[in-house]
Image (cartoon, rainbow, N blue to C red; front, side, top):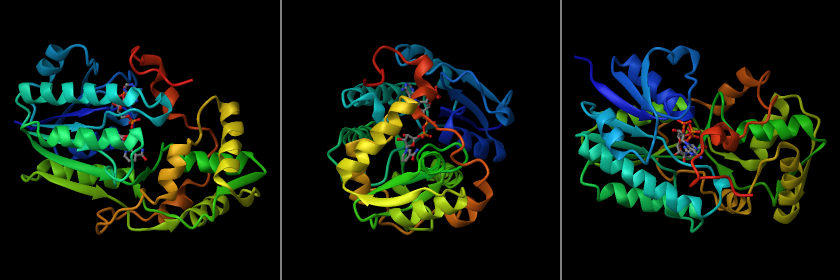
Length: 312
Ligand SMILES: NC(=O)c1ccc[n+]([C@@H]2O[C@H](COP(=O)([O-])OP(=O)(O)OC[C@H]3O[C@@H](n4cnc5c(N)ncnc54)[C@H](OP(=O)(O)O)[C@@H]3O)[C@@H](O)[C@H]2O)c1
């Protein structure tokens, strides 16, 4: 009998890469999702049910008989500080349902340096890690840095600004570092964490550490942008992001995201586990990257329950 695993969000971003890796390893995959459209290569291969946090019994029934739960559920910063407490509550409910269903191991996707920022996105991630550690289950906590790859948001949207605006504002000196990790590396690290026996908390980071200005220059070159790079104060860069955000009706960059970026929270202090090199991936994407704006918010908007509405 093939081993059965459950992935939350197998039709969305990181979850789809985890699902592909599990299927390739011969596991059966079920998913809890509100996304009605599987990526074409996963269609017909993954059994799906709604991720309905109000139906704890349904969650338990769906997970019964499965071995490992891979949890990618989280909300984006645009939903406002208050929404994170709900996301923690919901995730705790999911953990309890997994335990009641007899799930052996829970692999939870968190974020690198989760305890290093007091901002709600990070603080709630740290709180949830602690909740999992005391949930009485075998666990693997995987903490990615900045996830990139086909279909990502941040790298794509930097490229989008570079393609569509004559000026690109680099906040501050641009010397702060980040360590992107390819989404398939995150999936591989998560699946390895699922197969491990010990309770572990590990970073998922790629092999390259880049300075922000360097990253922007690489993207500018890759997409053939003529945008002029200007170093500005954070306030001016945020004002520019608000103007661009007005056009796409989204928050391109929040003050908190910028603070965390400048505090170098998107780098790992562990040896990198990812192997895919950003510089090798980038040239293969230059035709597509940044052609369209990618919104993490609208990706999930149609199916929002009243508790998790975007902040206006
Ligand atoms: N992207 C990054 O750079 C990055 C960096 C570090 C850590 N992470 C973490 O990695 C995990 C996966 O991130 P991802 O970018 O791959 O996310 P994603 O695929 O866009 O979403 C992951 C899951 O969360 C659900 N979800 C998202 N927003 C929701 C909302 N407003 N209401 C209800 N459900 C919602 C999705 O639902 P559906 O299945 O219905 O789509 C999906 O199941 C998250 O825990 C994130 O914090 C991401």
